[in-house]
Image 1: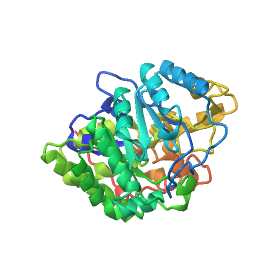
Image 2: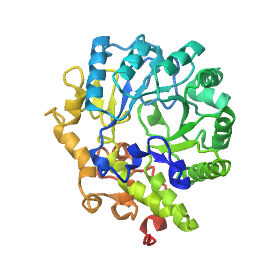
Image 3: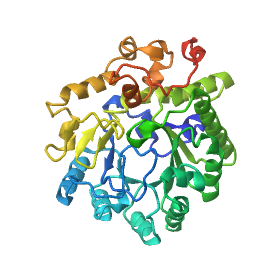
Image 4: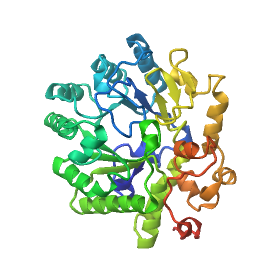
Length: 405
């Protein structure tokens, strides 16, 4: 996760320590506990074209019982994960959703919600606020009809907007989530205008990971990806000049950090050295899937992240998440070690194993080889292949770095 606001403007942002450490805490990024995405149900009231869980408006057998969910919460709290993201399907559809949110908050966890927003009534917004939910992330993929086409339901956009407004009425922090695709990248300006008009405090732009129904879509072409990031940087700068420090983040593409540094080098940006220091600590893809990110799916299976569903590390019905994550499942210990070796080895040791453009990229220490899940998809499961979503040009990855003081 790249916080453009923090890196470009230098202004402190929420969760800075989680993403970039701090000067007083020498903990390495690879030693962090994982942000845990928990898909609590696969059932959904929409049928989005890019849904990684391929959800529908139906019941799915085998989902965790309430007792099992309570055990997961206790274990995650004892393991001291830094953040819990409740997702779906549509999480608000789960019959024990608010019981779960309350239980997680009371256990000391910091729950956030990923939702399509259509089910957030004024009453539900008030309950989210009362449960100390850190923020509610509502997904939008365009304005009006464009969003409805993505969600395959007329009126989905208007319902999501009402969800935003209901949260704002009770001062519940909200975030907007958008997956960048070839179908909506030209509308980023409209999305940013909407964010400004609605006074949304946080926005996450996801780069497409071809999983589930999203496997039918294609990642952005390089020119479009660069244009999208340039547009975001421009708006971050404009908001900063206006005294607005809105969080603008990009997700599932560590190359965004490298591209940001390319821009900073070319423009002699005053925050260049500090941005590079923070990104080096973060490590990009080397410290994300299977290390800084984890997923528990609706069946209790544990995955390196929410997109990498074909790799199962264990199941919380048989073994606590914490034990699975610490390599306690013999059946998956070797796979977990292989995934994490990308982060455990030195940057030089990792890079000599890489194939494709990553093998001699000067930004490898910053990017960590891109988003490993997308790379594995594109390279028939090879953990050491390059990320096809990288959009840096050959001169940008091979030229000598500028000396930083």
